Length: 123
Ligand code: SF4
Ligand code: SF4
Image (cartoon, rainbow, N blue to C red; front, side, top):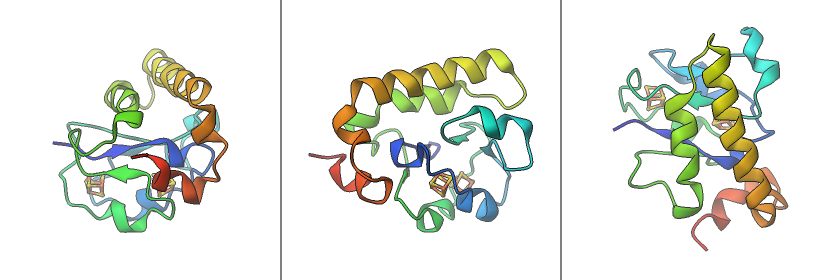
């Protein structure tokens, strides 16, 4: 069961999680051209080994440890994580479209500063 990145990452994107992931399954990295194209980062669902290292590294608590633990308000972003494939423009566009739809339909969450957004996920 892979870990899931959610909306506090939107516009935060500091890549602290990338630096601690032992299997390089979080993309795009800062040194990849896709980095400038995406609003957040994504975890590859088949490459993630569930080690948990990324969770404490994230300064905005954007990462949940499973699909089941991902709050209802963030469930749409599970598909964005699952669809995104670095280097594939089609899946990148699909994932980013999901993120845009999520942001557009959750203006209340997006109005909360990134570091405080996760605390509002379960309200
Ligand atoms: S749980 Fe481990 S393997 Fe999975 S994305 Fe986080 S750091 Fe990488
Ligand atoms: S550490 Fe958190 S905010 Fe930073 S890129 Fe990773 S998921 Fe996004």
